[in-house]
Image (cartoon, rainbow, N blue to C red; front, side):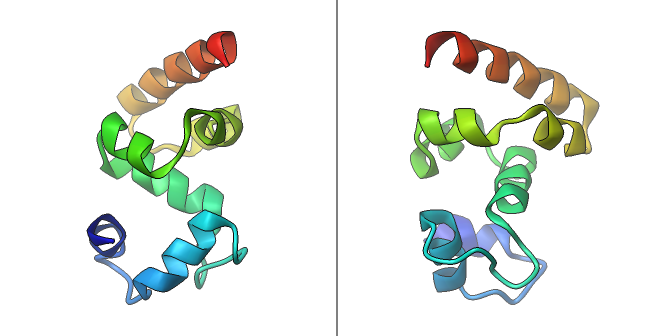
Length: 91
C-alpha cells in the first residue's frame, strides 16, 4: 500500500511487514509496534486517511491518553484528545 511506503520514508521496512503489523499477524515491524505506527500516522496523515486503514472501533481502542501524550505537536494532541472523547461517547 502506497500509504505505508510513504510512512516508512525514513526506514527501509518492507510494506508487507507493516501490513502484517497493522492486521495483527505480527507484533512488530522492526522496532515499530502497532501503537507506534498508529501514532506516526496520527502525526503524518489526515483523519480521513487514518479511517481508511483503521475502523472507528480500532481507533477508539488505540487512541489512549498515553498515545495522545506522545504526539509531538501540541495542537495535534488537543485535536486527538477531542476525537478520543467523542469516540468514547458514540462507540
